[in-house]
Length: 134
Image (tube, rainbow, N blue to C red; front, side):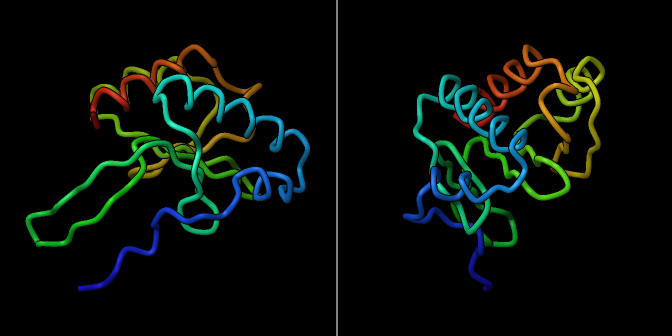
């Protein structure tokens, strides 16, 4: 069975963020860290080379594949900030309606900058994700 590539590392979150070229994205990253830290009670940790995660949970699929993932996480990628949250479909739909400017894929939410979204809704999304995984 393939090993999960996204695992917690000892890399420095601060060093990683300092290398983010876009100043707004860097500043937004520090704000997201504050929001996620307050909601989870966990310190930020690097997961793989580019994901900042908070806490962890163990998963096991029917296929037998299992591993550990952060409870909530994000990544300040070049084109967008990617949010990794654990929302069921109904929660996700309800909250995204009032979230602000974003794109989605099956498991991710993409934003350009915090200025484009409702921070109170982001906080609610993070809090719901924590409840769903703890």
